[in-house]
Length: 104
DNA sequence: CTCATGACACTTC
DNA sequence: AGAAGTGCCATGA
Image 1: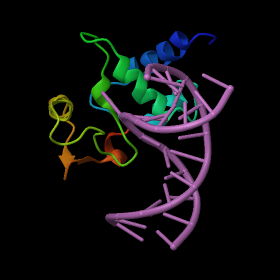
Image 2: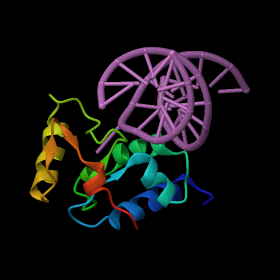
Image 3: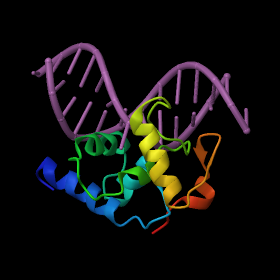
């Protein structure tokens, strides 16, 4: 992992391994990708994620079990729709991590 | 090279 | 249980 591209690649690869109907937190994804402590970096990578990508970016949520986007933003709506489409239920705008969190 | 920012996590009040 | 404060790391100006 000499170049930044490799780190992103790792995060994306790990994200691609998240099964449908499950979610992971930023910190967890970073740790699984072999980059502990890079929770924020995960968000940066997802932001840099090219449109049209098939990666399940919507399965990444914060430690509170909530979507990191503001409720009014289109992104938030999109993510929520995608999650619900996978059978993930949101309670009061939050996701039950106990139930939907993915453990490798 | 230093400063400020961010799709966050963790500990503590 | 919920809110506030502190820490961490990569990026871009």
